[in-house]
Length: 151
Ligand SMILES: Cc1cc2nc3c(=O)[nH]c(=O)nc-3n(C[C@H](O)[C@H](O)[C@H](O)COP(=O)(O)O)c2cc1C
Image (cartoon, rainbow, N blue to C red; front, side, top):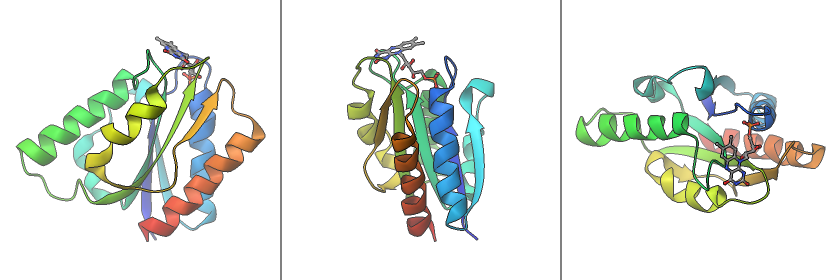
């Protein structure tokens, strides 16, 4: 059974968290074991990323950039994989989602920021404010597509 990480930041309204739960539902529907981690609850141990077959990353738009907790993961991931040569941290399928208020450009910067992880699956799902049922279904579909790539 593929193990997939859903790593996200959600703090203000829980909007990104609702999207993360829906991505996780899609992954589980497709038979994956899922770990959910909100970086608002604490720093994710980037070394443990090696145990996952794929990942979904979700962030609110904070001033047209990702939230600090996710940036910390990317910084840790770079130091471990590039500077220290730790194996097993790259070459993975990954999916992206984001939540925003009235605009912001995080949806444009996320694909480039996460490219070191491996190969992006599907298109980034972006949502304004509280995610609609249609957006949540897009997140579930993204989870199912990621599951197919993580096998
Ligand atoms: C510090 C901060 C900066 C933000 N900057 C932007 C922004 O530049 N553009 C935008 O559309 N929304 C911005 N927002 C709104 C959030 O992206 C939006 O409320 C999001 O849905 C919050 O996700 P959450 O409920 O999962 O924390 C900002 C919110 C905060 C707290």
